[in-house]
Amino acid sequence: MARCGFTLIEVMVATAIVGLVLVTVYGAVARTVASKNHAEERAELYAAGREAVLKMADEIEGALSPAGGRNVGFVGVPGTERVPTDAVQFDVVIRRVFGVSQGRGGRALVSYSLDPLKDRPNLFALRRQEQLLTDPAAEDVDPDAGDVEEPAAPTAFAAYLLDQVAGLRFRYLDPENGQWLDAWDTTVARAGLAPRGLPGAVEITLFLADPRGAIHDFGTIVDLPLANLVPTPPRL
Image (cartoon, rainbow, N blue to C red; front, side, top):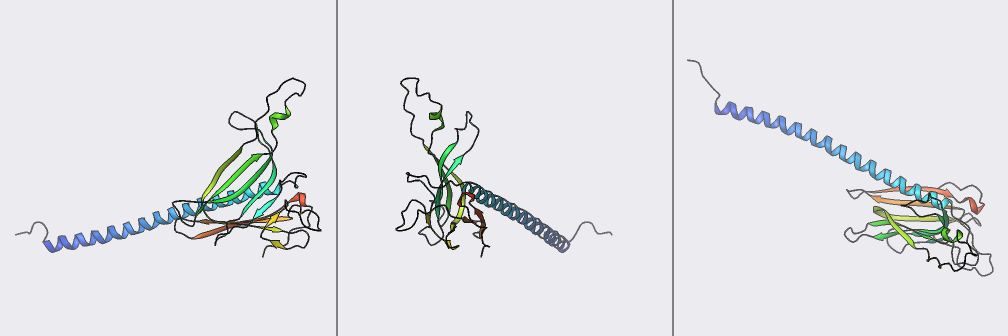
C-alpha cells in the first residue's frame, strides 16, 4: 500500500533547509541595505561638509580691509576646548536680491563659531552670524525732505548650518614672515609696528562626526585678494 504524506523527520529536515535559506537570504539583504544606508549617510555627510567649507571660504575670500576709526576688522580666535573650536569674524559686503523674504545687502560683520549641543556631548553646531554695518535704506533718505524718522540700528541674524560638528580650526598666513598663526586680530594695536592688516590666506578645517562616531575632516586654503600677498605656500 502506498504511503501518503511525510514523516516528522522529513518535515523537520525540510523546515531546517528552508530556514537556512531564509537566514542566508535575509543576511544578504540586510547587509545590502546596511551598505546602502551607510553609503547614503557618507554621501550626505561629505556633501554637507564640502558645502559648509566652501561657503566659509567664499565669504572669507571677500573679507574687506580693516575699517579705519572703527573697532571692526578681521579677528580669528583659537578655541579653549580640547578639540579645535576656533571662531572668526570679518567685514564683508553682502550682496543679495532685495525681496519680500530677504533684506537688502550691504557691508556686514560676519562670524563663524561653534555652539555646544546640549543633548550630544562633544558635538557642536556651526553658527553663522551676520550684522549689517551700513543700513542701505538710510542711503535712500532725502536729507532735504524735512523730519525723517531715525532708522533703527541694524540687527544681527544668526543661523545654524550644521549640527554634527566635532571641531573647527582656522589658521592664518602672516604676509610679513610667511608663518601660519593660530590667531589673528586687526583691532589690536602693535607697539612700534604698523596696524595688522588682513592675513594673506586662511586655512579652514572642519571636523564632522558620522552616526557611528567616526570623524571626517574637510579643509581648504583660501587666499585673501585684498591682502596683496604672494602665492600661498603648500599645505603641510
